[in-house]
Image 1 (tube, one colour):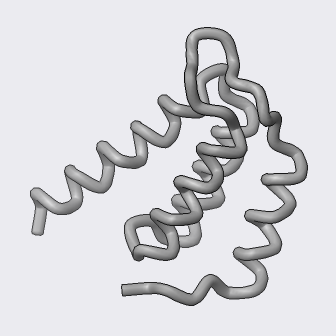
Image 2: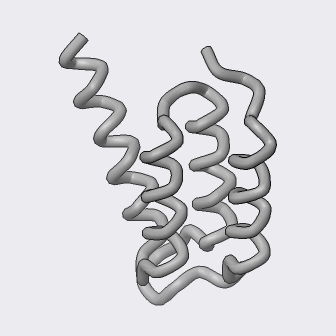
Length: 84
């Protein structure tokens, strides 16, 4: 299980948090900041690799529904678990 976040990834997360909006988008209860924090936890828990985290951060910052982005990566986690 991955618990330490490399400094380059930590910097990406902090940059994304600085760019993130703290207000929920229309029709979504999750803010961009909350979505990024959830993705950070998933990464630290080994549920996302570097590439997936990069993709997810980009999607959260450009999506109308950051919660759906996180849900999509949660669904990917479930699919990977079933394949094992």
